[in-house]
Length: 515
Image (cartoon, rainbow, N blue to C red):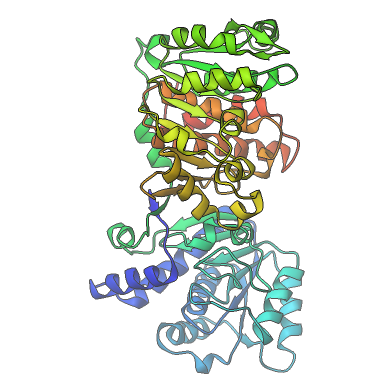
């Protein structure tokens, strides 16, 4: 897990590292090297880059990166907000080194400086934003504001050094003009603005770069907030032995679907099978069984008594008896909340069986999240902001305004692991620990993607993972599957089943399994 820090915590980790014997000049050089390697490694075809530098250490990182880019054959234009003579410390050292390397440093405060910046941006392949880093806490004004507006107006891809200029590192609020980055290189650790909307939407693709600050120093200042990384999944999803049997990988029950919403059950089952569940059985209204089998013959079905196309209350006894043969249960997608169906949901909750509750299995307990806290077995809730709001007695807008607080509150009140869906989904534990999922794509903003996610996590629960680990791994796999499809589809047009079908390839890459 990668710790997520605020500005104060980052400064403390930085100072601890310096006291431990790593000088600040080396840290700045490491930061510059990370920026340069990200640009050259991800975009080797870029020949001209404009670097815009602020007055502090972030500007020093930019000056050092400009020198390294020039040394690698990139034509580099450098602009600073102030006269470089006003720099101090490591930033001043790197201004001198940039000049010694033959770079011309233009000052935006000088007459015609802004016009020259616009001209340089127009002739560049990309821009490196090194105006402001973690120290900013107010809206930009004056030349800084005009520089940000020029960078955004140029229409060139922007790489942000640590934090897109205009964002405060300590929250996700956007207080004024802000650089809209295509990619952000977070130095040493992600900051709160990288993971909380709306600020996270300005960061583009997030890359975390090691610049020489120890992971222990960062962990001590994480404020109970972390970001998952590929190595986490590799530890939880080991290669399967050659003599594997389907019963070794979990028997998952899915209670889902109603007339007009059978697709939700099918998509959850498809996600579960693609995530590696050994056996998947869909429990649904009897008349829906042929639809499920026709859409997904690999899944088994178990028909239940119904009323008006939904599972009826008469099904409760039979359902409870049959569920005792399973390792985990996914409940809710497309299920409905008629009185009879809710009676079945209540009965299933009482079972000592790992459970994922989604959609209508959450809506059935509007304003009553404590109902889940009475369970003895592991429980995962996967609400979108509207469902989380209904459980907490808030609006979806209120949930979005404080996603971190809402996720923690719901986890505490429900006694469950909560996956609050959305850009940078949050996985919260009742203890207050939260893990941010770094993967995903706008492609997932489509009908059925949440059903697939439920199935993926359910498969991992049935396979024996702890609820927190299953939620973290499932969110990562699901988001990465969508990212893998973005190369072909762009940012729209995904069919939810395509995300399910891409999961095995993502798992293969993450775990290093090669056939």
